[in-house]
Length: 191
Image (tube, one colour):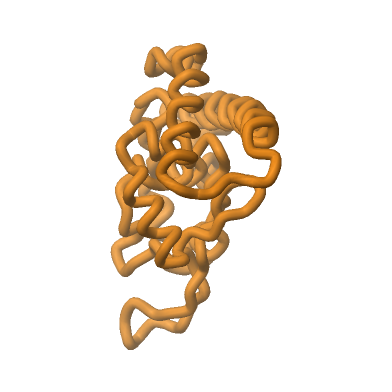
């Protein structure tokens, strides 16, 4: 079953099938996505600046020229489970951080198998709407990332300092882009 929670840029696509992932308990978290500029801006705009600064200092989030990389760690969550290399934020019950602090991809990504098993080919409404939301979110975040990349390159030619001032600037730039987007009105363009 697929469930769609339309929350504008914070939209969540959830599936009961993820718990049965053939990739194991860590599933997609074995290869976490980058936290692109739009993700960082969204997190800051939602009040997560200090979270980001603390996790950068702890080296759980690693600055790159395109945003932040989520560190991968090798560990097991129970003595009976194998050691797995996975996202630093993945725990025994799944993700250990709230959706507003995650890369957007973590909130809206579902694999092809999930859409198929969720009934997309049979016209199951929740699966069809989830696919539409996935496409709209992906396109919007790609546009935002391109715009924010250009702004960061122009405003910080030597690279950002990754301090509170830079993160505040990025959060404000994200809010500006979000306000001009159909996603600002939760649900528009999401099925």
